[in-house]
Length: 430
Image 1 (spheres, rainbow, N blue to C red):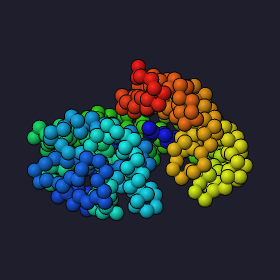
Image 2: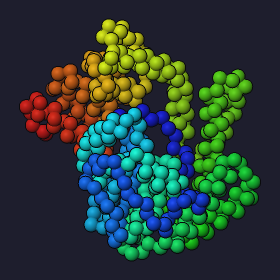
Image 3: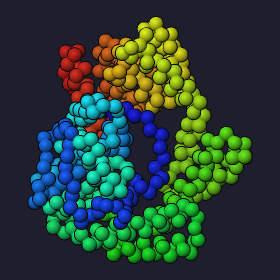
Image 4: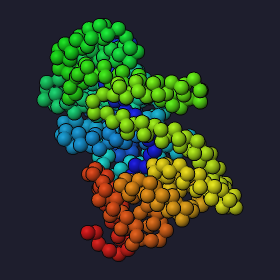
């Protein structure tokens, strides 16, 4: 179950176009480096065969976009089951020693179940990160490599072009020279985007736009499966530039910046691309700004509280801190943050003194703040009720979580949890 607090605005072109720089030591067409893992977590060990096709996808448990791409990778693994072997390689995992990292990855992969239905491994120290990711000048995850007959054919975001690339590879239609031209074109696209963001000369921008549209046709799409629209890219770049200035002024404590805020907001609203809800974005930013002080306060008291309920904690101190922590958490009125706190109190292994009533109150506050519409928040509340011995209530709320979900993989996970609660209660799944 995904329980993460993410406040992000998806403006950056990196989510659509991920380039491999010519200056990189590892490029498409090169021989794939060795595959080394400290541990094969799921699916058994894989050795790269010179006659086979593979996807090696780099990810980590802390990475939200990685988690979002896992069901898609599973779909592709099923679609190309007999032609392509998929490997999820955990890199840059947070934590101290290797044993702690392995435990975190084991737990995550187990929780994903069939939603993560392919081979999963962990980096052998830093070998995979250094010899694959860094060598290819890839600094962000998720990132996937397609390897066929020991050669790297494609590097990119698994949600942008991977499926189309694999379809060409298995059909024997993959064109290496065209792929290389596509990478060169993507570099030009990045430079074009930066020029548009910085407000460069309009004539030069339009000249580059025409060149890119021609390149898009020549290489069969700058990103396979994505329609290229130069004017749309220009609009996105200009909006991002306007939003950066607006956000900077909004969060500034400088009076001069505050005085510019109305004009900067008007500029951002004027630059908004088609299909983007500026009013919604503004509401999120303002709410985040207004709650920033409250969030900082709750994080500080939460750190003290978790220390008090940890391995070397103090029961009396925990009892004293709990009311202050709860009050600070409720003051944020942020459903995602309340949900995270509740989930941590229920499941974080570093917490040795669990206050289930407190976790239940925070979970219910998250439910109320989200108008009972978020499946993961409803799931947390059901878990709190279950851990508190209120199994019948937990079943009822878990059913609400399932009803609220529109994601098949999520529904499957939620249903599995419901069945556990029903088994405890001695009832049957409906």
